[in-house]
Length: 371
Image (tube, rainbow, N blue to C red; front, top):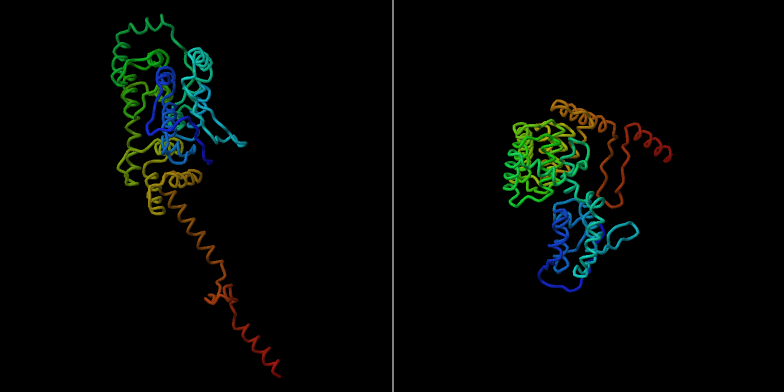
């Protein structure tokens, strides 16, 4: 990954966030994109290590595609200027003076992003979260209808909806925004979620540190696809995943909750490979024995190999181990042993293994030569 040059006007030991950004750009932006912009402001202020897309992704616990998507978003809004090389890799990020953006220019940019770019960008929280919740549905959240002011007023007059909105407001720890209300009505009207299920949905997502509507909607769609239509079914499903996480934590000896990327791997092992906890634990144990550390990538390779070979249980793993050992024994038996070479630097090559017949022939030739 290439290094990225940062350019800005003025360097300071503190990070200044322009009020214009907070007032005009931040409210409508995806939270993940706001994090990227704030991180870059910090880097522009100096004393940051070498910047690459990978380093930003690692720091913010996102994927590289998420970071690139965020940078493109801010470039479209003229808050950043990106320089690319011939391979379309970002080589330079230039901070644009935000004070130069007039209200008229902002309104124009805001309008142009509303129907196309913004829907596409706000539609996902992060690629990892997308994968984690879209394995069930196989698709990204579809574009839902927008309720008119009259329809919103009509639906929110329902006592059940009013109570659900009140509880959701408590979970989010802020007043509901129009997009929040639109989502709640969509869950109630289109997905036919009960008020209790809607409240648990928000409780579950907030407990995972996710408050943005795109993530909550994606989780809701995955539940709907699985046929989860009651609070009891949702609790059972989420408890099951907690058990998977706990099994991996115990095998790896980790005393923390799995990170986003780690959760993605676990979901893949459970939902795509459909492995039970004992098989996943076995792969984790082998990872520790071979790498002496909890390496999710290494474990993923083990489980992917087992998946391709049709492993369903521990008996299948034992069968593969036996086949592997048998193949190794057969290979070793076919290898012709070589005479151990001398440590002398002039003899660092394989020596021929002489038989009794060879020695007899050599002796005959020497005797004939002497005669």
